[in-house]
Length: 401
Image 1 (cartoon, rainbow, N blue to C red):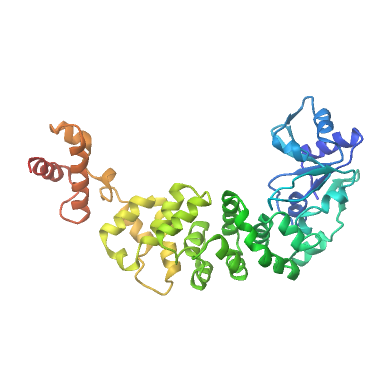
Image 2: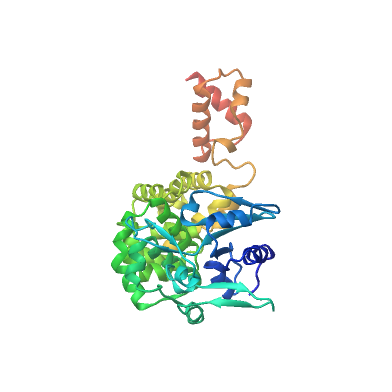
């Protein structure tokens, strides 16, 4: 197990000051799996004020925020940050999300006992011979070898404490290909309605993570009831089946919502913090019909909505919906035809613009926008060529009407 140099220095600094210190959680899990951790968290016997004192001088710097209430201090060295948290146990979770109280404790084993899954309940510290000591009281390393995701302790207790752990479990299984242990899976189904008490934005974060993961189709199949709770009226048998044909998170999301109305899909995505642009994009995906894709005006609208970078993804979604259907145009050929210089698919690609019209004596104001819109529609319909002289002549006729 290889520790980054900044992590080694932080652990060394804490141990020299007389405290115990270990890397913990996801960084241990990912390193044992041969993956690069996204971040390195440290757990320690030092109280938060003691951690601040240990790292209070250069080259270290300390950042303190609301996390200090739960024992967490961020320490930075050469631009690398680690969250350092005091060993702790936790009280009741009255909101099914965060503990009402925490109690600092002297033993790392007690700290690991509060964690969600066994694969995340391991701590490791470097040794002088270049290896490491692993603290693994719940068999997390064995579960990693077997590809099993299992709650620490009693699953119902773990999941009622923090209902978001249900979606975290789905995300871990989708990302790593873990099989969810039987009692843990049963508890996830039984506790799923507690997700209704979780902040929508946090649910949206986990949903994004699941959709990015390689095994998401199987997870939505196994936990369809949970998907229905967070995406009511959407996750049908057909929609889940389509996920296997989808290759990107956006296409998977559109497939998952493919039996929703566009308005319902957009409303759900906005609720879960997906952002207006993304929500409208998925709604537009769902509003298109394969029979319409042969129409030039529809193809131009697609080009205008999604741009050159997004049009291939849109056609990938339409192809996922009907893989044996030949009504979906070839994405590459369609993009080449639409995004060729001189082709008009929106006002911006029209051969004339507002400056051309004002240069011809048209008065500035709403009339110019109306004329440009009308010219664009006629070019797309094939009634006019996208030619400057022809468009100016048509504009003069419109002006005089």
